[in-house]
Length: 362
Image (cartoon, rainbow, N blue to C red; front, side, top):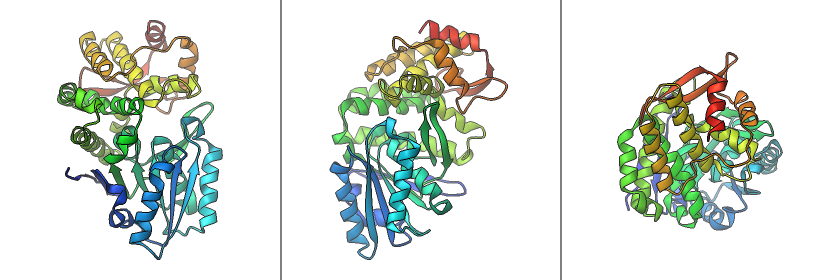
């Protein structure tokens, strides 16, 4: 299978490399390492599977380097200031200098937390993202958003800190639980929903091969998703405008995750529900037809994803979480909505009663 590459331009350009077996490529992994210190950050699920491969590859390519590892507990509930402190302590124990590099080996939680540690250590050192989940490959590893959660909401403490390279070894997806693969496909569908309706057609046509873990189909989906994200991030690196489109479904989704204490739906599943709710809100506000919302819902269901609000959630509590969402403004709620398949836009000052209406009928 061929290796695919996507270039992310802008003030701090970097390359996304996609293919099987890349975590064994010491030359590729070590190329961004400018100094002699490297910290591989992973979690308790991923480290037993892949950490030794990465460390051995780095050591073979850079025998002069001092390479350490830091393993955190797994799960969204661990993306905290306390765990961030542990990662910073690991950098201190390594004696990491300003030309050191953090290698974030894992899913979105590891990528966010390790990237944030890299952003803060000595006011910013290099970070290489090594995503091992589909969701991280197409979303969190690209673009430089790093953060940890607070009890009040997701990703409220963080920094923009672009990686200097992203290496997506699709071979790691073979060890990914089916539920996590489906969760990643939710973020893949998002790119079609916001900018590329034809991509939705491709996903529908290849749904069985994607769910079956076909390597070529997954690599194509990853490359197309990353190409869309790279183009948006290049034009708007700090989310002053267009980049907010990447949050389609996330205002609802993050509120669901926070209300459930990150314990029921995972991120991709919550975003799937959130996209359907955002599409329905678009219809309620007269921006789009209900037909497109039903097409989106059917595709998500085809991938085995939830599309209905979980039982037992209080709409008023969800709305309160949305008021603290990073896209909210002093004047009111701001949502990423759409005018139909592939045509998303940011809508300010969305009436709270309209949002509550969607939540109460979800």
